[in-house]
Length: 144
Image (tube, rainbow, N blue to C red):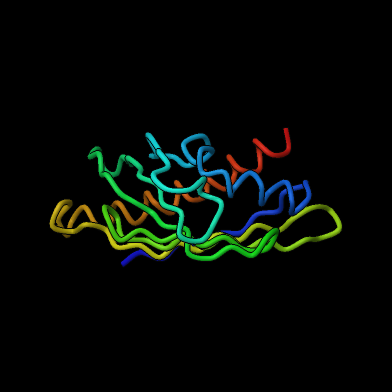
C-alpha cells in the first residue's frame, strides 16, 4: 500500500482552488500519468457521481473508475476508486491570508500482481515525485 501526503500554498482563494479541483475534467491537465477521464454519472460535483479514467503507471495503461465520496464546499473533496488502482484521494483546503493551503492525501494499492514486488518500490518512489509535480501543476495553473 502506498501513502502520499503533500501540502502546498496557492496564492488564490479557496473557492478558486475548490472549483478547479471539483471539475474532474481538469485532472489530465494537472495529474502526471492521467491520460483520459470521462464522466459516467452526474457532473462529478456531487456525492455519488462517477467517472472512468485511464492512467499510465510503470509504462502500463490502467483503467479505473472513481466515485465522489465527500464534498464540503471550499474545504474538502474525497474520491475513491475500487477499480483499477484502488485509491482514496482527499483534498483539504485551508484559507490563509495569502490564499490557500492545499493538502493532498492519497492512499492507494499498487496492483502488485501486475507490476511485481521489485517494481513496487520503484513505483512508490515515482508516485511520490509525481504527487509533488501534481501539486506544483495545480499551483501553476491557478496562479497564472
